[in-house]
Length: 163
Ligand SMILES: [Cu+2]
Image 1 (cartoon, protein in one colour):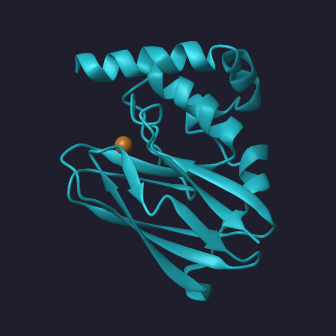
Image 2 (cartoon, rainbow, N blue to C red):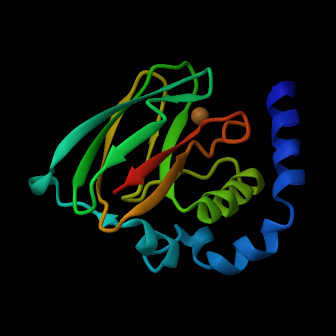
């Protein structure tokens, strides 16, 4: 636990300037951070499970890593991320812009019991599996991360490159 706290403190220092920005950027967060997120619109949209282009398997571990952590997709594809937690603690995969993930992470530090249960995320207990179905509609980079306290700054993040 001591180690996690230390990592979290590092993140606070690194992300301190983002805090005020983050609060402005995500006004609905406390109430289940509503559907009106600009940042969510910028990364694509929830996909139709009946129209999945392909499945990408992503594993999460207590080494604070996603495997793979670099994923290539084509604009217009709907991806089913089949996410597994092979660790012994809770992990989650959250898709977002880097700014959005940074600001959400600050809120997770303030409210560690918070769970992400939105179309762009899946939060999994040890040994569990779940899905995100997401449509990437324009070229660019979509980041993803585990926002459990200490995990993101320990390197639990990755990127989807949309071409
Ligand atoms: Cu994690």
